[in-house]
Image 1 (cartoon, rainbow, N blue to C red):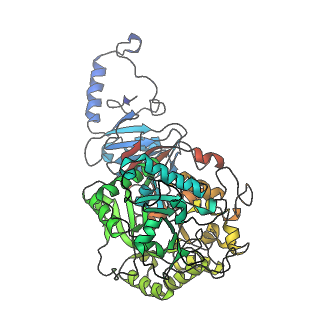
Image 2 (image 1 turned 90 degrees about the vertical axis):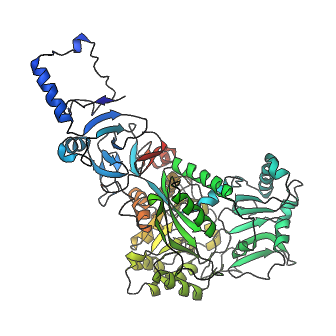
Image 3 (image 1 turned 180 degrees about the horizontal axis):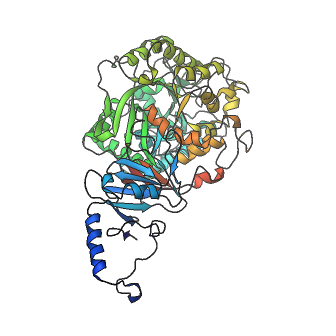
Length: 615
């Protein structure tokens, strides 16, 4: 319903506080007013004034106009996430920009006169109310994700498989469900999400497990692990890679006791697999999957942690054609086997009307904890024969990190183990001497296991810790077995990082974890599983490392904006910034923690336009 104040000044008794009241009928004698000379004079005067004033109109649903105010029913339902964490009732949007914030009375007083005309023109300023009990927050960001890999993971998801046999059955069903695949035994089959740590024996699968199924047998099958650091491949794929090298620097070809490859490849060894090149159709299908789900989950910005030349070119084409419905901040993958490109490649900054940037490099220092590749100072507690491995040596890191920084690239380094984090921080410390770290903003991607000394160095050096709270509640069930009771205290020690002056940015690493930002919020403030449990009980796994709700919201909004050099235009709801915001069904800042996962995204708005839902 809508009502108009076009021909009269705003009344404090009008529908500002109640837009459900029906408008009086002009045919109702009881509500009719005299039409004497004084009325005519007043009418003419009001028409003249109205031609100069910004007009207020109250509405709900339908497309958003070029200019409008969006308000909550209570006086402080909008979390601006500004420097003082202020809360307001309304924001005023003009085209793609926020032009004002405040209470409904503030908005009414400031935008009802000629001094407040928008762009010097009369504007029919529509007021939209969100549903009672809902809140508005800045557009949510995921600071570490893999967009096209997410799209691929939706094709053949394996997360639900609790045994090797169940995983193989999912592959078989996928083949049988697609006639094109079923009838072409040479077609590569790709899936994502198997997790041997959730299986009864917690052992790696083998190519023989795939060959045991008559439908799968003989086909090229490439299945990515949940953490993205291991491939499970079929015999056909192994044959295509032969002759295999004896070893791979920064990776492992898992072999049986006779030395034969079993079908699992870790970290850099994954690069031995040569899959068919993706077509534009493949890329677009994957992109549509991820965008649809991201907008439905309230994401307006995604930091993609690994552009390849193919994906970078794809996203650039989408930006040039105006086809990016979400903001993407890309990290271009560093390949140590290729020529250094930091002094040759052009940075992409705010292409496609601010939708695409690619001004950072992604470097892998080590592997992952789940697959045993994280580089540790001391051997794994559950596998004393290994300390994990560095995917790049300290010498290479000390060479390329300062080179990229000097050439103006933000440097983002994947580091999981305490040894890897220490080596990367050594390289950062040497490269950052005497420079303005704010201009460079180096990042540790994951920063999972840190010594106390290195926690302090993160804050001292101004390095951003890009962390994933949902990894906590996934890994907490096996982490102590892998690291031991003392070393595990340095794993996912988010509170300690912040208390040492570190800045964090939150993400999910999707498709490794679920994309939903509400899962991130819940995990960060509780450190318990969705059913309220942890190895340390319902109070949380190392509950002293929990984040506050304010820290978590900032870590999903303004902190990722800082981490992507966009804090002047994104990350908070302030005049002069882009109108990116999300309407949530309930107040995640106040509801009991166990109810946070029930939160729904009612609307996602980018540049002032609805991208998902309604208002």
